[in-house]
Image 1 (tube, rainbow, N blue to C red):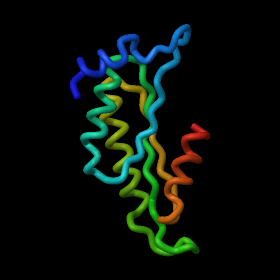
Image 2 (spheres, rainbow, N blue to C red):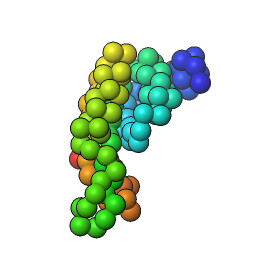
Image 3 (cartoon, one colour):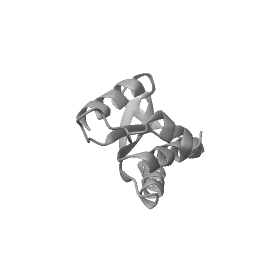
Length: 116
């Protein structure tokens, strides 16, 4: 998809009749291989006012907390890099790291989306 494709799809810059609110995008970031997703979000940011929240959930394997797949520092670095990339493209961005059991990741993402 090119910026022209996005502009044709949303010629009014994501505006809704009578409203000038920015489009809010929650990006669930899983690992460093999400470069294509961030590129797409940067592309959307060129065509209208966009606010992005980058969210990464640290997965806990057991019910009682137990071992995690990655450290908080690793997850934080991943989110910080994505937020920096978006900000360098002129997009308002924030980031967060949350914890969740492997079978509850979707619930953590939904909770974050509703409180954002």
